[in-house]
Image 1 (tube, rainbow, N blue to C red):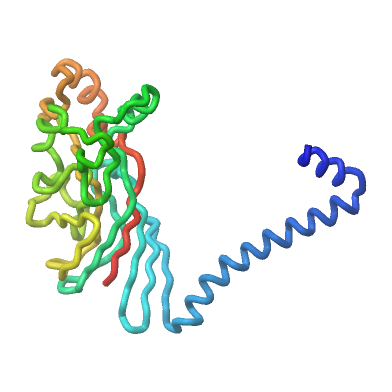
Image 2: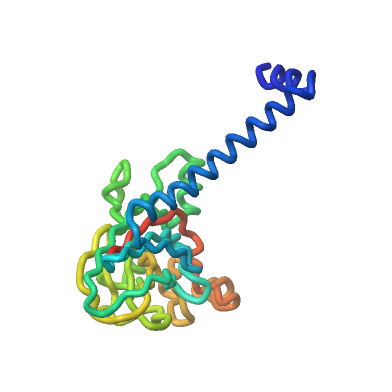
Length: 251
């Protein structure tokens, strides 16, 4: 009734409609000015601050004191041709690098939906940047046989499933880099960079290939050939993820 009364009041007199339109325009303009003012305030309070938005979506703030802070929102789906996502954040060898992350991701969205429909706990709980912890589920669960089999096929075998991991590389890193090159970031990582390059990030999952039929268990080899190999659907596990990690990189 309140909405209908508002519509009647607006249409009863064109002056009311004109005043309402001016008010809406004024509010929109104020919101836009607040957003722009926020950016200008940063520049005014910290002269010499450079704000840049990379094609990757990373927002990078650099100061005259040669301090750089970058913010990046990582989804758990990987990239088009591989699991590693180019953040556009450049790092130099020897730089002190501090990475913090927050947020949660779901590593089996179809199970989450099925559990929601049935009102039962999901087999895989939501995961923070430190990786999957089945004991955090309510009630606590134990890893399914599938997870135990698949764990050896993760991008990084020494990190937990779903953990935030990274690589510093001049070009796109291999799908499964040498373990010494992988940064097991989790929710906090603070070390000098061992090499120069771009920061690449992903969640620790499985990126399939023709030789990983075992990772598709309990589905049969025939199903693997039909569903995965025939369609080159190597990112099937990443496609089943949801959520995001908010990452801050300080250099």
